[in-house]
Amino acid sequence: MLRALFEKGLCPDFLIGTSVGAVNAAWVAGRPEPESVDDLFAYARLRQAAEIVGVISIDRTREGIAIKLAEKARVAPEKLMELIRAREGASFAPSGVLRLALADEEKDEVLAVARRVLLQIRADS
Image (cartoon, rainbow, N blue to C red; front, side):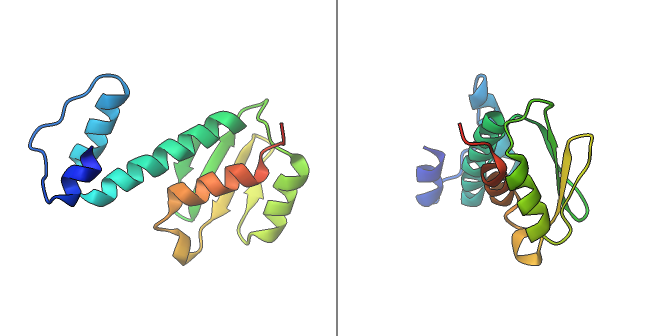
């Protein structure tokens, strides 16, 4: 609905929501522009991937992102090692933190990059 309003050139003066609707309203209120709706969808897709894999947190770092995996995260070790070998600036700590440096072209797509990485390393069900 918000996307349709933005496409018509309308920007709401007031947003309200309950539960996840409150999160959505806060997100869009902070950035009342069409791109914020797209980012909200990207965030939802990332959150879904994080739940599937078993992620505790994803943080933005100066160099890129840090993904803290749960002790019982559903990650394929061989896929994780392949990712670390393939990506310059990637590392994995025994504490369960995967650190990734982002290339310049990835810095504006942090949510999508994090989601792609999670889907790349997840264990097959």
